[in-house]
Length: 341
Image (cartoon, rainbow, N blue to C red):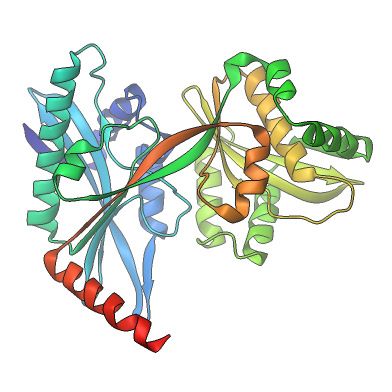
């Protein structure tokens, strides 16, 4: 096997591998990664430290076995490697295995172990981080090689709705209260339609006011300009020609992801956020998509809202590795900290 850092001239090779893999997402695409690299910083009390992208690929006999995009941050006393990047509204990224579905399970598992070994060797012996953090994408389920390599493994969850059941079946699966208030919201004159770049900025401003988004507005606008209208769509709720709320969705392969938006509102008797999501689900079905993801089901404060749509829990994983020195510092810190509470 051979590990290679993919360059700009090979971006089509990268994107083709991402597209053909069951683990590949829009967040793994070359264009997305390069935008993220420009906007991701690790903020500390000594300043902001930029990210450096390493698009790592492992080959065997000129065929891609797997990919892992990682971002490296060099701080004064700490070097860290993460996948995804920090503070750019990417909840997961992680490894992408090549299209090996036709191989025997034993062969697939051995290839994953070899891939992980090659990647781990490069990161630890070339980049020399003291801390590694990876959030895998959903559908990447075999994390044993990471566990065997000393990574801490934490299960995470996201919600997925199977759109192939059809619009009527999904609607009937909603609770009575949700269906009642969606109908009532429409009767109160709230409409939902696809929005513009300015509507995307409106959603960003709402999230910023509520401290529910990390990056600056220029990150969102660059994403919008590069992915809309093909793979990014805005849905906006209006009443009496006034914007109320909205969401931004991403589309890739056969999937739709509810990425950003639906900031908490308190409007008596109506639920614009729920209506927007329902309309975007209906749009996804009408346009032939097969799954709809309501990203991340780990935040207890958002649980009452996200559970309403009766999505299926889909696991992904957080993987952490710390150098012996970093583990020692962490243990000392947490050993001393309770004394000062």
